[in-house]
Length: 90
Image (cartoon, rainbow, N blue to C red; front, side, top):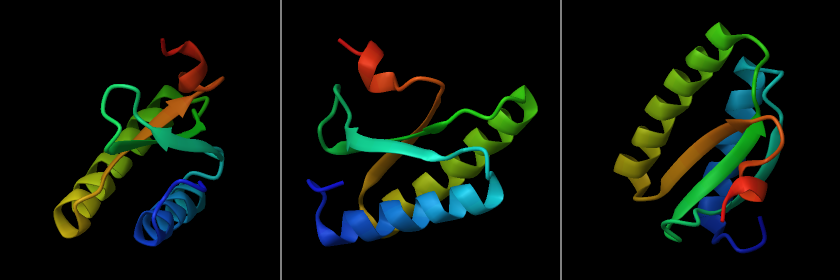
């Protein structure tokens, strides 16, 4: 998370804490610029085993990410993954 400005760092850390509190199985993996849009940040978390939990997680983070975009202007995308999306991009 070293390439983030202080506000981005704060928002990412808070979002990750909130995700892990609500979905303990969705542990933080990494954060990095989107390969398609460097102004967007991808936050990788471990995908829940249950499809229902993954759908819940996706709905929860979509709402939270939209709030962050509207309130602060930062585009954050949470990517539930089993092995890291960055490895498969390219």
